[in-house]
Image 1 (cartoon, rainbow, N blue to C red):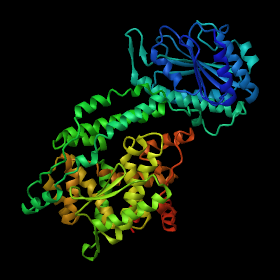
Image 2 (cartoon, rainbow, N blue to C red):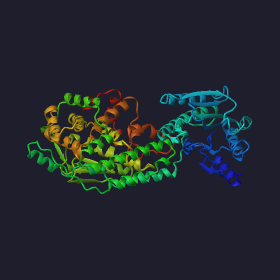
Image 3 (cartoon, rainbow, N blue to C red):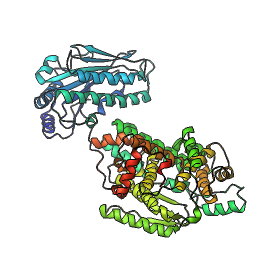
Length: 611
């Protein structure tokens, strides 16, 4: 029996639109969000694998119960009463029952009424057929039938009950292609892929029903995803953030003796490979990996969030492995796993840039040292702090790093660093207007990974940072040549060339200045060989392509996300999980940047980005 208190809670949730998640006794659980005129029903049978219910629990409106629940049960009667109330307000309610077909079945069977909701049926059929293209043993069949439930079970709702409550009833039989019951094998990766695809297929079909058959106002199928994040997600986010906070990856793979190594390299007539030294590791890599894989990411039901956090754990595992292998040949192979290696197209683009762009004359350049550069960066931080007082980024000049580096929202500048006056504004907006800004935009989001960075965020980050240089008029020939030379050096590392060989290749083969050639080569060989620097040019190329194909720029500053995350973050924004960002790069508001961005979108090539 469903008690009075439960019924009252359900009634109240329908009135207010609040999220309701209630046990109805035994294995029965109902969840309703936002008065959605839709309910997904699954009656679990003894032979069903326990993971099957996760197909259902990823959605925002569902009922999971056992196989004995039928049209005479308290649960079915309660569902009828609830849906009738929704139907009276919105015109109709869709109830979809799903179940697993018999062992050996290879068909998705969609059971529906004749000539009812054709847009919904078509959306379902199209989505399932698209999925079947990657599983060619599977087919899709649509049956116009009065029986829309498992044939061996009683109706969950009779057609008469549906007519009385204004319910459009559908059934979906799912073939058990992700398991082998005889061998008691469950193919988790196949099931995981299907779960993600099924969620999108379902939401698109339900959206068509709501759009055509009801008065329910919903702008996008993605908004059908749950708008409430499970407490498990916050715990997993915190656990991953805690692990990542135990080390600063970029600092730990950066040499602390680059300048001394350079002096020794010069003293040895550029023929003896330099020996780099590193900071002591503040972690036990093996212990940290054990902690990492104790995190129960599989408990995340939401497909989008599950994907994001699974990828992030894989990235952290690769980073921790690299720290353990620092200073060995294996470091380079792990680097390729993390950042990939330069492909043929990227290598040819880099080579063409170096051959077509002549070097700037360093003798005509006025230089600014690290301490003056720090002042310019502090001034820009202060300007952003007026808009967002929570921004507490600091700038520190350090003796044990080379160049400029942002880590956890803080900017570090090597004491030996110098920059041309022409490039001051470009670097300020590269470091502060991109890296620092996206850290703090991400930090105000509910997920810690938005500030520390979802997996593979670096490529988009560096693409945005270099784009900032172009938009403020500071992308010089030498700068673009440097990005190209980094790809050449990355290729040399992966092909097994020695430090001195790569150094001389950049000078003799591509006319790089000795100082620049050393810095590029040192970055490529840090840790034992690192391909990270190829992402600057690769990220710029991808970003230019994205913008020239109509992509919006401002949403990319929401936090530290990757290119593949753009549609996922957009979905989370639509679901009101991601909030508006407090900061927008100041340079985007200038007429110069607006004009340059317009020209870029109209089709500028890479060499034409040079100012």
